[in-house]
Image 1 (spheres, rainbow, N blue to C red):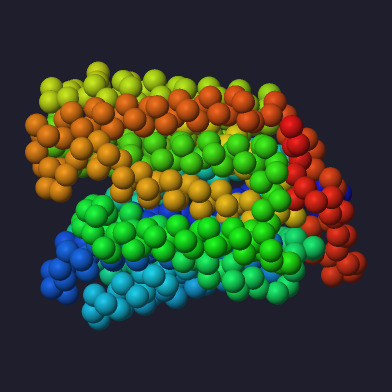
Image 2: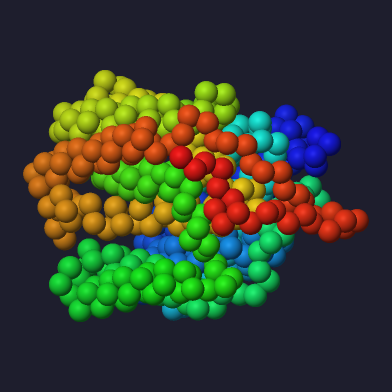
Length: 496
């Protein structure tokens, strides 16, 4: 630990903090997808229909997307470690309820509770990294978090499949309990507390309700879209509620004396630019990770396991190179890697769009997958570091919450809208003749999204992020926190 109270990346204390945040984040990341493996077993045991199984998946995504912004705001106000610990404990309790659920209805309710825990712990993990490490080591720490977190995403389907096959679907939830216990022990002993000392202690109830209604309505509407179609009353009403909720949320936050989302933070061009790039990039990623796997099975004829691991090189590259990419962005500035990364990804997706019926993995799939992974390595760590570093440290929690909300909303919208926009109707996922042209078109759309993100990064992301105004954010029981001067710019570090 340095004299300023910040941690160095290579220190033992820094490694403990990284362990706690990686394990905690992995709980939420894995449970977003691993339940898919168990759906058939769950359906057989409970006699559940397709709607019940759909909401076993979507109940988690709905509560997580709706409340992740609140999680970032709470961590700034009440302490990042405290909210992170609360989120992990909540997630573990909900996981236990999932594993013991006697009916499909109670399982769905427990999954919704899981999403609330994920919304508390996910932005808290990134905010802890931003506020705990020295400015010179933050990008490396975030890069390592990105890469190591990818291991969980890669191992999750293998572990889930093994647990379901050798034991019971309930084990994929029950295993979260001992992992959460480890996270709680490590975080309680080794993670320093930090908060925004100028944040109001009162809760923005109006902002909470309108924000949750807005994100929840949009999430529900686009989730229901593939099943019911765009003209169905459920879809139309849900989307209308979502739009009205978001508009009302902005109006409420503009007038609130203690807003959950201080709108002045968007005066930072770097922060706004980073989140625009995040939206475009993660919308493309949402389409890629859905459609490539489906296309490999249906059109190219790959077996399920082979298609499932086809994108594994992306995770391996992220693990090996993310910390180095973060350090590179710290050294040369974020603009170049955030521009080059999406453009490399765009080229890879144009290449991936050519995968057809006679594709061979080593010659037709692996090379563009490697190129795609290299592009993401260039992009992800500098993008995350910029989204958090563009604002003063006191806003680390809300910056993380906003960036997480943007990324998750983009992926969700892409998964719901992209197949429909590309002409993929209900029931055609198993028809190679229909899927092949739709897949090519969708990959080119994703490539265009990536390229647009790279162009935006060039114009909106600065060469360097200006150093933050020094502010004491670590909790010191011997002295009161120093409040940062409120210049009205939301603590922005870039005003260009």
